[in-house]
Picture 1 (cartoon, one colour):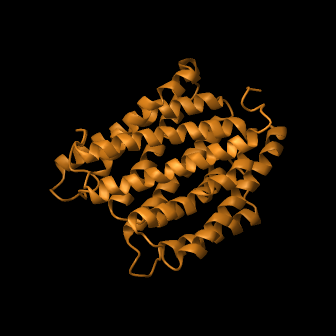
Picture 2: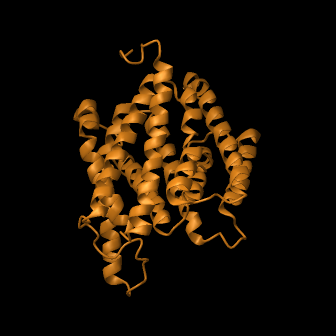
Length: 321
């Protein structure tokens, strides 16, 4: 056991670190719409430079883990995992660039556990129970309420955080598969090392698409070409801050899971919804709709139940293996 986790107040430290991660992620979700939607910087450019800068700030964490942890039997799965994670970030940033409010983005991104359940059932042969199915249906109802399908407030852009959740849920399923053979440090290191090159790959593909397709085919908020030139002025300062905060969030998460159990930390992770909603209201004047809170509570309750049941069942599966 490491020195930090052996401290008598380790659970308290874990909660503090998790709340710190929630606050830093909330700050990124405020900075991103300011840079993209208000300043007009394409989301692909913002994300690319965000992760370049975040990786530089995360170098001490990468070096602490050690490059020896890159030995693996599953290089293609690691790359697929990093690509899907990058795609999720791209969908999320693009949603902000199109003006989807913070409260809706964050609430709909919390549908990730439902995609984890689906992927684990289909690809990892895990059993689908009545309780899990009921939780999935409940969460779906909550997502419909938050997205406001059938009202004037609903746009196709409201589906972008759901696509991000699909990508991140798939990442979790692949992570669960890889964890059978890979060490946690290897999983962390591969994500830190590979995610920025994958953002470059996505930006490169979008640049080719802009060059080959008729003008205006792709939204300007997504890409205007090969968007690898670093913005200047106020946008540059905010992007540097965005990268720094992104790296800080990774440090907070790393420390939190190092000192406390994931099941204990889950309620503190769920604080990201009210934190993001509050900041979106104070900084961006985005007031949630009347259907937001009941829908968000359904998503939060259902996803928490799924995560709790998954973690409760994990020891039994390990004993049977």
